[in-house]
Length: 482
Ligand SMILES: Cc1cc2nc3c(=O)[nH]c(=O)nc-3n(C[C@H](O)[C@H](O)[C@H](O)COP(=O)(O)OP(=O)(O)OC[C@H]3O[C@@H](n4cnc5c(N)ncnc54)[C@H](O)[C@@H]3O)c2cc1C
Image (cartoon, rainbow, N blue to C red; front, side, top):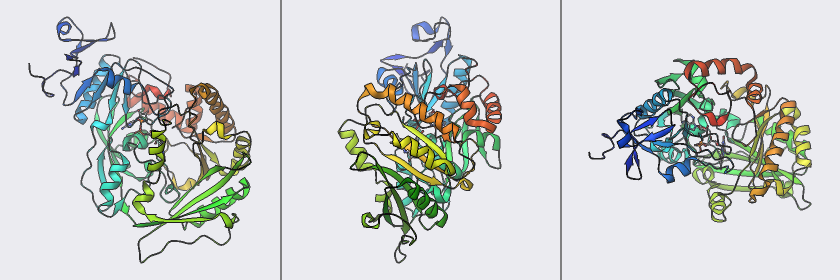
């Protein structure tokens, strides 16, 4: 039989075919064994792989801390492939996770003994309209931006790093400096196509099937796999002026960040900690104004209390600004720090508690704790965030992202324990984790994390994924079956 992708049952492994799964032995059956039992793999448009290259890649992520070995990796040739594989997983008591670009840091897209679906195999960008575009979930924001910018358009909110999949960030939230005007990426989605844990392909939006829409956006892959997203577009400006303002005092920094957030003149607002000569930390506001000549950039407000002698200004193109961290990523890859563990910590801290919480945390933080990685620290307007499963404080808040690049793997257990300590203090002040990081959590912690949203989330999980097939790597719900 010719091994064309459309007429084989399943996929190719080192010259052999995956014909079926034996649910008793929990292993694949080759062609010879297929006649003796086991459940046949459905006919696929894509490929089901179990070769070591595919398995090794799917057993790792950007964190390089957790390693879970799946039994196969699906490179889907169609959305129907994903639906078939979810139904097949239900039938055979297997678990499934979609993997985007693998930038999770703590095994969130991994599945021990299950099937990983590689979203990068589905990466088509649909017709770009004036205010929207429909894309496959495997599209990277970098490719989407290049395509839309060619037509004078941009997604309103971009992450700092653009080589993340659309499905991956919409499953999480998707934040960046433009969230100060537009909310998170999940607040800028018009419609989704989702394969539920039942194996159904469904379309949902705020008006149509809103329960699934709300369960999928920032839903960490628990109720459905996002396969397509219709995302908003806005006119793109051509130029950007970026200002950096420096502070030695946390209270002054926080006050000025809140002033700038309320003022609203800048299109982008971020900020971070900067290590200083005495081994402590200073703070910098990064505020950017987007414009197209003959328009001009907004100027810095006159009532700020930064050290004016340290102010910097950079003028660049919108695309250079959007891709600004690419050179740093290239450097980190070259010196090997992309491939070492990344026990990241990401938090949303209520603005009213941020000086105390960050003051305490930073007083014990050293450059050895970060490995020189960025420590992002900037504010959000609560009123702009609407996705119920993106858990944030009930007031304006700051994100604090400790993006650790320790280099030395032996420090990782200690840093994970430190993340957990930071998390316990965060919960005490009414904050929430932003679930991109590496914090050891129990289902009980997740229940507290979701708070009043938990009963609805748990009910949606039970309805849309009744056999508990999807995305076990997040560890949110106690395992029921499979
Ligand atoms: C260098 C770097 C920079 C980052 N910068 C930002 C930033 O500026 N802003 C920000 O908000 N985040 C940022 N992140 C975090 C990032 O958004 C998340 O880690 C995101 O989940 C990664 O996307 P991914 O495509 O790599 O997903 P993966 O790591 O492959 O998957 C993450 C989780 O989402 C699930 N998932 C993936 N695709 C789908 C889908 N289609 N449907 C359902 N579930 C799915 C997976 O199963 C897994 O649980 C950054 C991460 C890194 C490593």
